[in-house]
Image (tube, rainbow, N blue to C red; front, side):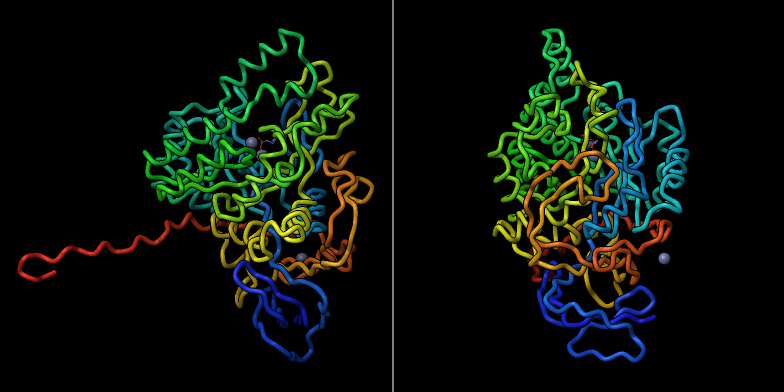
Length: 476
Ligand code: URP
Ligand code: ZN
Ligand code: ZN
Ligand code: ZN
């Protein structure tokens, strides 16, 4: 059945305008003023913003990590995402060196299929580049549409790859039109600092932050950018937290390199003092890289605004405080890293960003949706409101004032990382390919509605033709 969303303020990364959107068969077929469509269901959006659905380019659903498994899986995680205004997630498919990549991809399909309520794609971790990987990877990129590869420069003896592996992955990505994503921290030095802290009896959560200083994030970011330049490839730095890393990305971009960066709501709003909360509560705020001193936040906001950073991912990676985070009681290095952020990413960015005047409403759409669609091969099917695009739509009430809390969130975890934060604005209804997933703040979706997204390859920016200088004979 056709749907007609009427009288909303439609906002894209480029424009803000008043109008109606006609949806047929899951796709936007008409945008205009005073549209009429026989037999269409009318949805009144007056007084509301109508945004393209959020795209979360960084999630870990149903992921084994630190001796346990993330609490939210593709069902609870995507339901929470939908409540929060997110209609697409791209999750990280983890691999291990002893098994074919295709096994890992099959395992990730099995986790998501029949469970996800919103559309989803995968990034693929590369831990090693050997003959098997060189043989398998082009096939997976082509057949699965997995056009982004993840290399960890940290988590020594777990996920960490060496610089040679990163460089060869960058070379392969250049050949294949894929985008290489890095977790940029110097894992070797961090491993040493952790051992030293524990030997000295420093076991509290705060030492997680103290053993991962921002200079080691900046160093790894700069190293990855240099290797990208050498390989003439493309790089996306995930979860950027600090000034040092922003500066390396900005410098690379000034040189004209295809280097991009993502930050997360936690780094924009929370700071390192949270790790000092008493009764081990600091463990709730253990992320890698860690929360930083507060002054870095302004640098991150400015970087979003001026284009040094392009996206905001949640890095959703949720563990219960009781029964999971407490694996690290008496040893901070055993606290599972990560937090519940998938649901509040969109609203925090709107409230802290647009409402507080740090970014424009169009920039908000860009960082929460459009830029990810472009970088990860989903645009213009996803990431905008345009004729022919999927009808992934958020109807947003900007007047609601509410408080983020575990008591009202939909994630399965026993705490909310942003507990008590006041936000302005709320997604009221959310559609994925023209179907309501959330309607008037109630869940009406179905597990399995979410479709797997076969993504396009990374598009090189257009190279302008170099004008030849005229020859002596006047023939150019
Ligand atoms: O602490 C974090 N970020 N946990 C998730 C895994 C990762 O490094 O992205
Ligand atoms: Zn990471
Ligand atoms: Zn992550
Ligand atoms: Zn459906």
